[in-house]
Length: 204
Image (cartoon, rainbow, N blue to C red):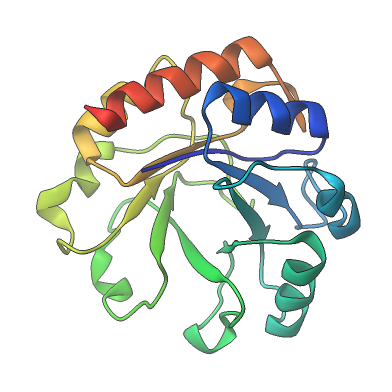
């Protein structure tokens, strides 16, 4: 079970997320994102034992992903670009991100070696997520391979995460923009409410 808070840019938000019950923290290394954080700065942000440190990347060279993973102490590389399997880093686990829109199919990920498939809403020309939800029922258990671990992202907060989990039966959930007071700064009340609702839904 994964409850991830993404777009972490400071130690205060990371500590609050972990205290609230998040077990994965996301750092965005896409330089065009308003939530970008330098690898060295991410390395300085402490996370508790058992909390996965996840780096968000977009079309980054494998060698650079591996370098940043080493600097920032990452456990997972979350890949949002057009990466081929040969581009996956060797030193960390991979979560492959995919946008869900009309005509989406799990078929093209049948041979994907990633630990999980992170499903995000449509974001136009944006990468790394646009805070837009999608039809969660369309990716329910009946439409995917039984072994596939999926993580739901895109427009999630306390108001809808329980419904999303009930429809899609995911391994985990991921929230960012809808639990912020500004890009890169978390609203701690919204974050707490999201994490509580997410854990309640996933544990049931």
